[in-house]
Image 1 (spheres, rainbow, N blue to C red):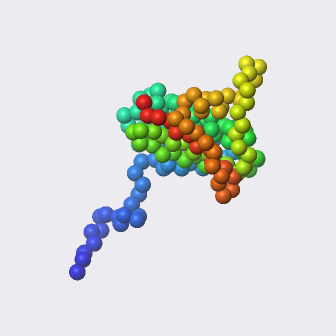
Image 2 (cartoon, helix red, strand yellow):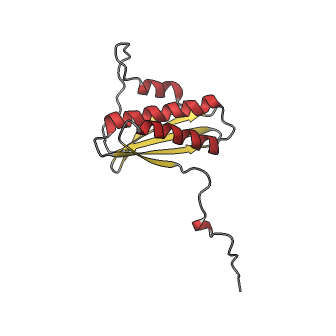
Image 3 (tube, rainbow, N blue to C red):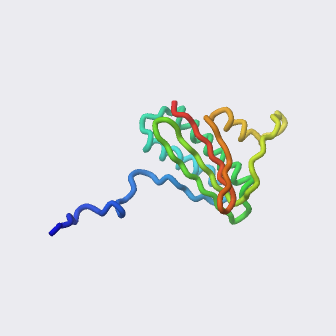
Length: 146
């Protein structure tokens, strides 16, 4: 007869280690702040030897993506999903929103205070792209570990 130890949870029920990889956000400007804190906590736990510059680069990329999703991919009452995946090679940031319209680069302009999000992604990311989702789209970007 096999005896189960009572002090260990079955693998299917074991609590997750560290912060979760997914954060649901309201489509409101205040969500950008929550996204920044979520990313910092996630990276510091999953890539503990990451430099502060690397952490802040991933935070900036995620915040730009969340902000663009709020501005162009949600309507009042909508939500979005931020998903992270990190290892010692790269961090992948995904933001899913309910609107299918894809991000469009804008010409650089010193007269506007907006329109630089995709320029930032081009400058800081290994690559980025957009995938269709069942309800909307997912914008993703990968930041190379430093």
